Length: 243
Length: 171
Length: 171
Image (cartoon, rainbow over all chains, first blue to last red):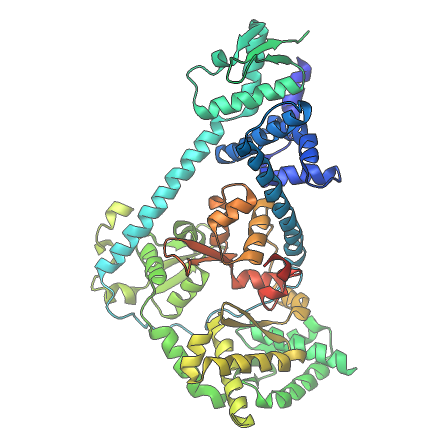
C-alpha cells in the first residue's frame, strides 16, 4: 500500500516534457539506438504505455492524440506476438503511415536542435520604429465613433470565445487526473476482488473512460491487477492480485 | 591597433550608436569598449571619412555622438515619414486603438492577449502619431499602460471616453 | 545607372531603413524611390557586400528588409542595452518554431500533421510573443499560413531564413 502511495507521489513525468506522442515515440526509439521499423515500434510499445500510465495530468486534447498512437502500437505489437493474427488492409496502411510520419518527425528533431543552438547565440538588434521622433498629433482621416465601436465589438467577441474555450479546457484538464483515477480503482479493488470495466465507467464521460482505461493499463503494468477479455469488444474484467 | 582591431572597434561604435536613440558620450563608449578616449575619438574621425558615400552620418556635440541620416537624403526621408504617419489606420491599428479606448489604461501584455498577436510595433506607431499616450502603471513601475490621447478623444467628437458608444457595457 | 546614381539610391535605402527601424517592403521602397523593384533588389545585394566590415547588416524575408546590428557585435550591444533577452522556449514551442522556420509559410493543419498534435494553443502563444506571424494563404483566403517573424530571425542571428543550417534539405 505504501508502495502504491509512493508511486503516485513519484509520478514526475509531466506532459510538458514531450511535445506529443510522436516526440515520445521517437525519443524512446532513439534511446534504444534503433531505427524506425515495425520491430522497434513493437519494442517500445510497453514503454509508451508506461509513459501514458505515468502521466500525472494530461491535456484532454493531447490525451486523444496519445491514445490514437497507442492503439496503433498495440496493433503492431500484437502482430509481432501473434504472427497468425489477421489485419485489414486499412490497418496495414495505418502502420505504414505511422512509420512514415515518424521518420519525417525525426528529421525535424535535427531542425529543432539547429534552432535551439542559434536562438539568442548572436542576436541582432534593430531600432524602434521612428526612434527619436517625438510624437505629433496626426489623426487618421474619417475614423468615427462607430468604426471604433465596430472594431472593438469584433475583437472582443473573438477574445471572449477563446477565453471560454480555454476555461473549459482548463476545467476539464483539472478533472482528469490519472493518479486520482488510479487511486479510485485501487480503492475499489480493495473492497471487491473483481469487477468489470463497464461497472467502473458506468455513466462516466468519454474522457473519464479514456482516463480509466489508462489507469488500468498502469495498474496492470505494475502487476496490481489482472485483466481478462475473452474477445474483442467483450467485457473487460479486472481482478486484484495484491497480496 | 591592428586593422582588424580597429575594424572591430568601429563596428561596435556603429552598432551602439545605431541602437541608441540618444547621443552617446565619449566616456560611456570608452568604458564600455575598454579603450582610451583618444582612440575612440580617432576611430570616429576615421568613420566619418569612410561614411562619405553612406546614408548615415555621425554628428557630435560636447563629446557626445549620434548616428543620424545624412542631410543629402533629407527630402526622401521627409517623404517617407509622411507616408508612414499619414496613411489611414490599418484594421490591426484600428483594432488596437479601439481596445485602448474601451479598456485603457491597459498594458501591452493585456492588449496582446486580447488580440492574440504581438502589438509592439502598432503601439509604437500609434504613440508617434499621438493617438495614444503611455504612462507607468500605478501598480508596477516596470509596466507601461496605454490610454487614448486627449487629442484623439476630441477628434472623435466627444468630450471624454465615457461618451463612447456602449462604454459602460464593456467595463 | 551611373555610379553616382547608384550611390544616391543606396544612401536613400540605408536612410529609410535606418529611420524606419522596422522591416520595409520592396514595393514601398520602389514606389518611394521611383525605381524598379529589380534595381532596388540589386542595390541591396551590393550594399550587403559593401557592409562587410560594418557594424550593421541588412536582413530580409518575404521581400522585406530591415537594418540591424551585425552578429559579431551581439555581446557588446547586449551589454550596452543591459537587456535580459533570453526567453526560454518549451519543447513544444521550439518544435513548432522549427517547423515554421524550415517549412514556412505553412498552415496549421500541416504543422499538426508533422507534430502529431493540435497546435492551436502553441501558435497563439507564439503569435502573442511576436515570434511568428500569421497571414492569409495566397492559395485560399480561408486558410492562414504562418511564418517566423523578423524578431525571430533577429533572435537567431541570421540574415535570412536560407542561412539556417541544412535549410535546403527540408524544402
